[in-house]
Amino acid sequence: MSKALLIRPAPNQLVETNTKKFHRRFPPLSLLYIASMLRNENWQVTLFDMHADPKTNKEEVLSKAKEFDLIIVTTNPYADWQCPSYDIDPIIKFCQQLPSERLILIGNHGTHFPGDLLKQTGAKIVVRGEPEIIVSSIAKVIKSNDLNLKHIEGISFRVASTIIHNDIPKPSNEFNFPKPAYDLVNLQNYQYELLGGNFAILETTRGCPYTCSFCNLSMFVKRYRKRPAPHVLDEIDDLVENHGCRSLYIFDLEFAVNAKMAETVCQHLIKKDYVKKYNFKWTCQTRADSISAPLLKLMKLSGCDLIHFGVESGNNDILSATNKRIDKNSIKKGIFDTQQAGINIAAFFMFGFPGETQKTYQETLDFALKLNPTYASFHPLLPIPGSPLYTEKYGPSPYWDDKVPANMTYFDEKQALEINSFIKKAYKAYYIRPKYIWQTLSHGKLKLYKMQLNLFKNFAFNR
Image (cartoon, rainbow, N blue to C red):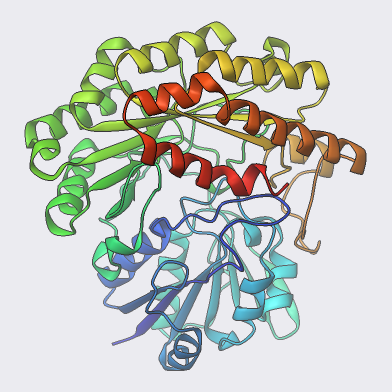
């Protein structure tokens, strides 16, 4: 039986120094999907999550890699497709130690910079875009001993010293993968500090129907697709009842946009009574204008403990320029309704959009204080390859032979210092204020408040 090794390498540190990107220990869902698809083709699959599994030893992984017919390494797994790390030197150095002729790379970096990633790592193939079906096609070719890769869409590969780039496959309306192979990982190794442990992630849709200027949808082939509801519910039951999942992140980019699916999931969880049986909790991310009071009530009853909202800015002109197609009043209503339903809120704010000034920065901070979410996260605008803002500045992707960027910003040195200084001010203004402290402690949440301060100290006080 052919053997495949799937690897998620570890970053240098949990929080990147320059970008403050948080490398959370979430399950590598794209690798788990690939594992299931390879198993369906009679491959024997082993998975090493070097970031999350404390038992994984780098030298052991490198030694065992010699035994496999196919080695697949992700530079950033789903759910990290939208915000890939710039600091991938540790991954490149790790890949350089693997058998190059059997090495396949997947992730956002190779999607946009395939030539340089092939050259730096020595890999045989780089997969561009959604990897699952493409990797399955590669595996079939390898298993048949057919060395001709020219007919496999969506890959860049080496033939001797020549690099060949095949076209990306035409977008498909289907999103109907087998259940991810969660038996290959231990959910106790994963957690989300705002929700809990024994943690898993799940998709009910893939992609997004919106086209925000700062958002990177390149890994999703720019299509919005829905999974069949029975498959979603079956996967939830499998996670909870067979794998011990007690906290779940439904990682759709906009969960409640598909209101029918959201209601179906909630009603299923209520029927199963997982909250009472297992103290089950779940979270999602969605738009503030996609929710309603009746849906929020269902979500709360079904165990929804937290909703993530991308607020972005407190200035309506800036919001309009992002093409987010939402205004402050809609955001206020959605967040107020969520608070009334008793669901925690994580709200995200960004600074440095084109046309921003100190005045608009302050408007965003004032808006955050007025909204008063359970958690507020403040970040500089980052140029993410694949986003419309990045394309506007650097041209359309792929950048065939350009170097993978090590550290990029939209700002000159003076602007960067100004924005970082304001973000530090925003964190302090938000979390160290009498109203917030009293609100948290009066609800008996001393432990929660300590966790919040610890969680964000890397983002604020060390800037």
